[in-house]
Length: 393
Ligand code: GLA
Image 1: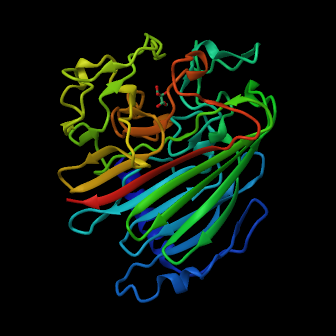
Image 2: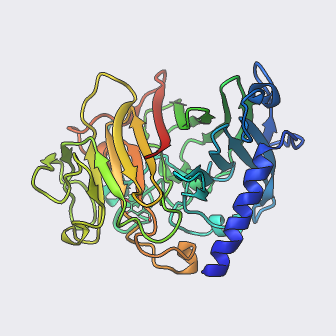
């Protein structure tokens, strides 16, 4: 474990230094680097400090079936950097300075592509076609019943056996005056994992000099289909240990109570006077023992005229690191890494070693007509924007 942490620290430094260099790897078939408006070098000039807004791509490895995967390194002039691979559109690392300027990786991940290819905890990945659970893997659309994989028995979870987290995405980097990013896209054929319609999904990851890491999603389909996509980063603002002493605010007056297999009952319950109330800051560990199995629920984001709406705030009191989340989605799944168990399959991370704040629609919406709509029809465009803003206090 200690050795692993040391290795990942050195790797982080290397990634960080590489991220600040201006060299570019040659484009490959599935991922190529382009430049819009200005080159990253021009965009980063005159910042007056050692960090620069930059984007770099480098080979990450090959999948078991021989597809070359690239890693993109986004960095800004405040010392924040984000690494993304075009396998699963996975965020493999996010380095953020603390109040002393010390940079740590604050997201959980594996060291190798081979580990990401195995069944895992969805570290950093884009989940879909339907993130979260669908009861018994069944839904009816336009009079036809569809049966999906019950890969989290008896439910369907995160898109099935080979969800979007297990796909090779096309990727293209870009560099503008104030931001750098990667545009990833995927075509999910009609019938894939049992879902109707050919779905085309674009995910754009952007980092700017205001320490905002933004995810924009757009999708279209040639037939009506359920869609619910999210990013499954596990965050630990301390960069080690558990998240139990970190503080959370959720701008949510209601949450969705669930059955014993984590399917919402259909009711919206008030958080007031329950351990689910994070409308003011609470340490995550403070009341976790009162919630069977730990937190793994969807909260209802309070309506807001301002979009994306302020939704969540996490603070690590020791390092001073703060992350705020803003989203256009109606729900946020707060999961406290209850199934992490320190084993290799968990990347060596302990139970509660990270937390997920997954902006999304409500679980099992295709079977809950009262929930906000998750059916995308031909001619419509699915859209989501979620922003992670980092700061120190
Ligand atoms: C989601 C679910 C959890 C768990 C994790 C993956 O966040 O809500 O129950 O399945 O993914 O381990």
